[in-house]
Image 1 (tube, rainbow, N blue to C red):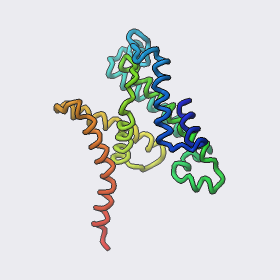
Image 2 (cartoon, rainbow, N blue to C red):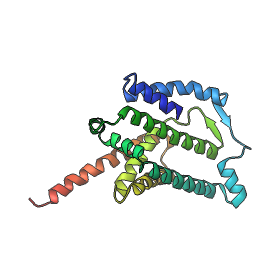
Image 3 (cartoon, helix red, strand yellow):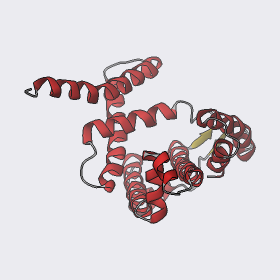
Image 4 (cartoon, helix red, strand yellow):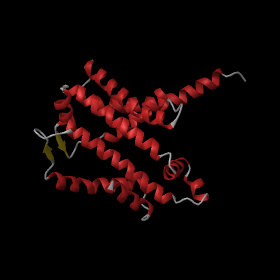
Length: 227
């Protein structure tokens, strides 16, 4: 969350472009993460984690414990985010994402909203990273490489399959559903013998298709609509 705050300050106060501000923060975090872990990797074998606690108390195996922890964390995150974005500050944050020029015209402080959004998003990222490290039994400095592509694929797949119907809670849940569907696709493809070296290419193809499907459907619907 502190890293998100720094990124927000670089972008809003020093007027550094958003993407470049994020890259600068990631470069700095490389050194900070190594200092926090005491090295490029850190073993968690024999340590109590969220998963070992579930395994010990409920007598589940690793797969079921992962499922239980994931569902519980997902429910908590969705509930908290749904409540927060229903508040005045949360609504201002959502409005800034939709149309920051309109928010400025109404007297809102978009810089504060941007910084707050980056702080919240980085907090969620830290929770995800902690869960991944505990599930795998170790933390590595290179674990986050390529995660942005996976996150983008999950969001796009969730929007394409589940859509933006009903309320905001449904939209949040659809993002988790998209992540599950993405992982199922990856597991299925690996099961049929695709090399792990080709996963980056396959992920790019999946994201491209997911991004292109809505526009293709819209064009097809326009053609079928009578004049």
